[in-house]
Image (cartoon, rainbow, N blue to C red; front, side, top):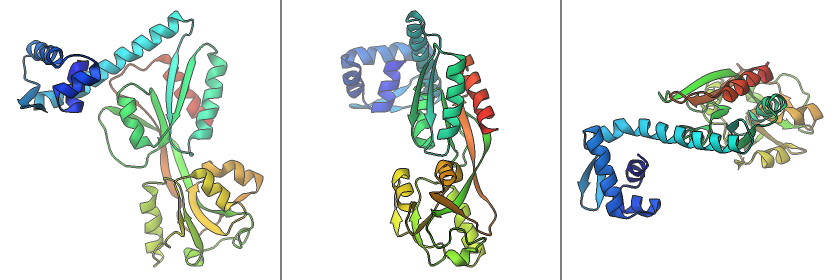
Length: 292
């Protein structure tokens, strides 16, 4: 099965063999045996390259799931033999979910002191492949793209609200409610990876008869954005949750704009076909508590 996956991903038996540390003949014979067991041809041989058949495409998600769960079992077995009872690998979307995940993790480690935790950061769309491959058990992130993947189970934790933000010394800070017309000539900084909510923001400006102002600065760095706002003269749009601590400390303020709220759902994602270990259920329950 792993030989099949390598050949599917790399396009040739030679490349798959090199990656696996085997001979090309060994990989070819292995896949021939798999085809004989399944009773279908998985690859069309075309010179050095191989083309997956429709049967290979059908088999692919099952093979990935089985390989991922095999890896998960080996990791859990190693942990158990080493005295640990539980492993959880969490993918966290940029910024908006960080505090919620941290709260849920603190609760979890208080309940299960002998477990092993790994927390990785990334964009949701880029972490999905690691979830499907079993490298992650769960993802907590803002849903940036509205789509349905039959292999992914998504549960909505709540809505993340986006806001126009500025440094405490900005002229609009503390002014009271303003309109989008009041913002059209301001200096803008494009926030970090705010994704699909851009369409909702653009629609608000169009409804007001405006074209959304072009940003003077574009960045994918949350830290840089926060530094520029602190004491600066730019505006940006980011999740309120991201800058909650800076707002509480008075370094960053929310500009009260007369618009319908801009929101995106915060979701927790798991694999549909994978067994859900008790530690995942416990973590998800703690996420709900943290959101409440």
